[in-house]
Length: 387
Image (cartoon, rainbow, N blue to C red; front, side, top):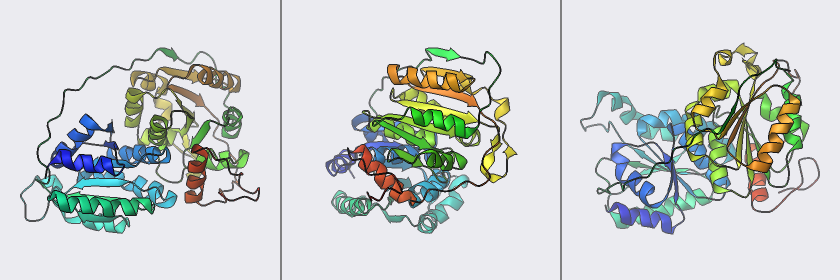
């Protein structure tokens, strides 16, 4: 079918924000998205899911594009971010390795299990028709599922889209402007102490996104607030979630609070963040060199210079923070100057043994955050009001 006309129909019903990773079966639709829409090129498919999820929190109706081999990479956020938080996205996944059609050997098994995998993840899906009139009706069906907070995927066979040439792209270079490396000994505060400093800089236009594990749980215990989101699962996705939200809700300051185990899992996201470089985002890494919530097993973070990595990826500022006073000062600086900033701080490995969990369900936290982003401010948990 005519790719441009299909893309226009997507846009007509509100889908104009795209993220994903290229596939030859989807190249025409991806070209259209780059040419005519707002497209964020993800480092991998899981990051694409997280970016799109952040965009949805910011009020967009996002589309994710991927090859079915990449669907395996997207499993973690689909089942542990989108499912518990009820974050609906529209997806297009190619059917490489379709049974009965000759293809590369690496696609053979995934071609047999793509539909089953979507079923197991409780993602509603249908084959996308190559007839434009039928495909338009399918889009309306998909939009109904998305409006009910359910993800919907189209499985796309070879030859579904007519060729859509990619227009010449102008690529900007994002260069680090300020890099501050380690200068003295680390104070090694606790995570709780660092999070209290970060929380103290929150105002009515600030969103705190806390990575999975003890980071989100400790932030919740310090002070629950409508502008907070406590991630569960989807390890490594907090930076990408922050990117999608920062790009689509530029009137808010977005703080992505990460951990060393988390950021190591999806380091490619740093390159994406650095390139798209939203000035209203700060990415804070609290590094205790351990997987704290699973028993303190060591990570390899001690062997990685994260300040150099973020700098090389194009973060405008990449700063080593030695103590709580410096953390306070750097947050003040970011609030005033507003440039994509990466703060790295080593913390101690000690934390509370008895740590509670948020009383609200993840999807209730999401709904409260969306209300907050749209101008509402329901009471924090325990104060007697519901969003």
